Length: 265
Length: 308
Image (cartoon, rainbow over all chains, first blue to last red; front, side):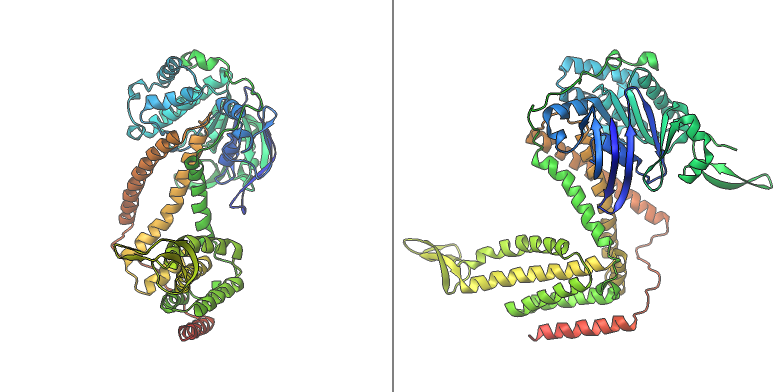
């Protein structure tokens, strides 16, 4: 995947991305981080072929992904079968009557036999530990269960590239840990993982290559998780950490702080 | 976790390459429409919100504008001639120009809605089957006249002079009412309109419903757009119109359920913050000299059109 000088704006006057250049290679695991409104989700949606750049190009295997190219049957099939997108709000992603239907939807779309589809669905349910939910409608699931089903529905299609938008948002700690393990295992098995998040704890745990988006919607920096998380000036500049004052006993104490899994003092 | 990964996930994706020229995917009308609908709603209302340009009408107090709207819509409904209606149309057009509105965007909507709800609805009354009078354009000739229910169908069906007048009047009334409404809506921030309505003693329950609807439209359009994108991300082939209809029916049920839950949550949040049946606003700014001048000028313009 390659993005060349990609820009995007909402209503033609609210910029979301400016001149973004990015290359994603097979087996990469990349975390796109930035403050709220920096354009992470927009960037991810462009990479998922759900929005198209207002300027610049987005290439997938050297073919430009555009509204036009995605109308070509062959390319649509290749692109959608290769790139899976997990939405931040699982509710919008789950539209089949039951969990099992949800997991079967993708394989049947890909014209995989029903038998093979069912086998995949069962294996994915086993892996995600949601077998007991298979006949339940999505509105009778908890947020964590919905997220698992949403991930499962994408995994059942076996895409080579997985895009996750704020995967840990609204999840309890146990489900978050489960998700981190799953992402690491999928990456180890050769999948390309790209996630948009402002959860620096998740970035640290995944040890991903980090792309930092600034508040003016440009790529501010890229580097390893260690390099980026160690650069406090950068994190302060892009509004991912802030100065925080609180009391330690009777002493007023000020330090840099981030609302993530780690709390640096 | 690694040893729980199913074997098919460890295998490479079967989608290897693609051949060009394998045909195009036709997106069903309903499917295409849902994405456009969400965008349209949001764009439309965002323009409404973006009424902070420094044009003539933007500087006038919202109360004056709301009264101007009501007064002029009354005049538009009372007039029975094409000439004063046309003059009002020109007057509103000039006001839109000096208020620096995007004429193309505003009048594209006004004319489209005017065509559908004015011209097309009134068109049958142009014929002598409905409006009696002097036939100036004969269309169909029948061997004899007929009487059907309350209608008399003449031997020669055609368009009458009186019919054309009726269609023109109805179309102009709709276009003028729309132009007036859009002029006020595009030049007044939403919260100012609500405050003006409150000052004009519009019932609180009505104001609450309008305010909540306005806020909900954004949430609704975002949800609809996200649902559309989520569907798009999992579609690898052409869908039949029946499949699209099935999906839309399911999603309508989802949106309904979500709206009901949201409604309960919002009401609880309002109660939690001390809501007790009445809408309270902080002080309205005082009307300035320019507001009074504008009010007097608009009032006399209205009187002029009324007696034209």
